Image 1 (cartoon, one colour):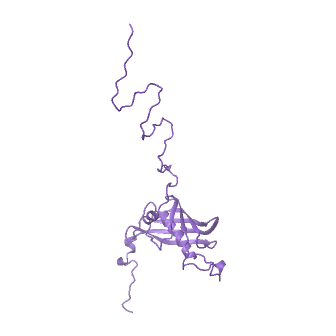
Image 2 (image 1 turned 30 degrees about the horizontal axis):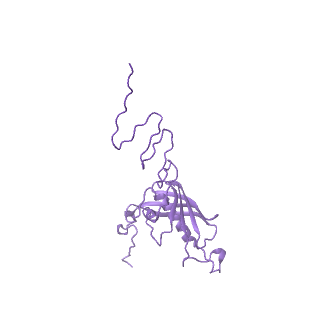
Image 3 (image 1 turned 90 degrees about the vertical axis):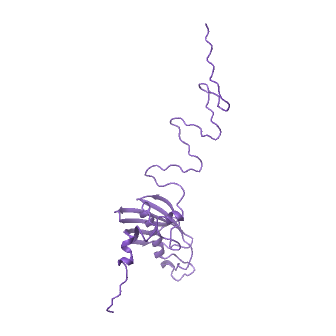
Length: 229
């Protein structure tokens, strides 16, 4: 006696037709294609690729808003435009485009040449120092100087200005952590313009201190008047 072949299960309207062994699986429009074991996972367009552990943070450079959420500096005192790479606790790279302004003066190599100004060392070092504060506070941000821990300049040494910086130059600050003691961070690094190193910082020390200890109302930094005078 012959056994009739099994009839396929009936399908409802709108259901995909059953597939036979070896037939390709049809994916409805708009659905991602399934991946097999061992196949690479495709990242949708526009989504950032995942960053492996221990690697620098990937993705778009933080904007002014991101910088302003970490440190209290604001324009015109803010002298860092963007952070282009950061390894929290280890290294940070930031950019600053130098705009011409009244703060420029003839540098040592340009004495008497008012038509060829250069950036004062004080502003160059301040810009680099702000990048150092960004690195020190990246994982412990505090944009408010009235509460939390405030980053203070505790010391700087072995600073060398190697070349003048002209208006329009893009400063590339690189900061590295030498040692992080929790409330004190030792940093070092350089500033490069193009292929020239224009600044070397042997060591810049930042002290993170509670804002209440710096409150003039508490008498820590208040000016007192001698009644006998």
